[in-house]
Image (cartoon, rainbow, N blue to C red; front, side, top):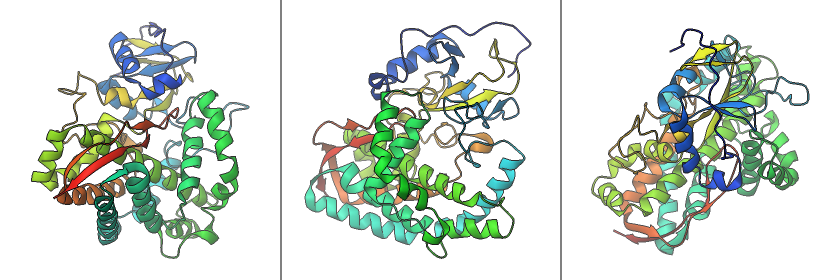
Length: 402
């Protein structure tokens, strides 16, 4: 709720840099400090507010009238000179423009269309899991998750998605939303060889006939989408639909391998895997932080938030908030937090492609539970540190078949 004017300034959270590489890799002490200090704090080094409690995050996400997306979902205000970039019309826009674009894309991404992909997803899942059973020991990211997601999502969306290109561009995109730090600069350098591909990968001439991408261009032809916006929308769908799903599945496999009791439950009842993605992304939210900007001086949670000062919503902290969850640091397939966690967002910007991510994950995880008896770590999982996204680079696993 918005409070009566207080004039109170949020307290400063000092001593922890959320964008330091060590903190990005292990964010939990920062999350706890953020939640415990106050409903809203000030990160003085970055001159931004930060929120880490579930209830306040949800309130802000639901209130686009006071907390705008138009200045960008990253730490930089893209409206300012020297920081400008073309915003995503799906995630970095407010009504009425956002409403029209989202309605057009939602019409294309119909439940009927998404359900029609089940056979493709199930066939690819069966093939990939079969290969892993032959190996018995493998890297779940390199050999299972990444090739599966890139194959099925590429076919569905209608864009060619080579693994090396997608990884490099994903690191660039999800480091650009943070400050100009070592992670940002390293990602920009690694992405340089792939920038031409990135620019042309979603051109109309390159997308597959009958695909989602082509339908978005056709909607632009019909005037349902503003001229010149279709390419940006396709790029947004590709970026949001690959890296985040890969990250979410990685979280599931990482925790399953370290929770033998949970894997035993899944083997006994593979249908538990239908909701496993939601628990995985609650535990390890792919988008750790997104930003909003107050449209005016707003009194919120007992503090006055200044107009145009960026406000970071640390979804990863909110999704482990003990005020909301029992045993929040436990991976529990029986929890079923769908519709409660904030990893997919909420309100008018709730993830438009979540049905695709859920179907991809259900098909792969259910097939895994049906054919695998046990899974355990074959080594330490390795991080892929990014300013915004939480994703693993490597998950060594060892399995025994049923």
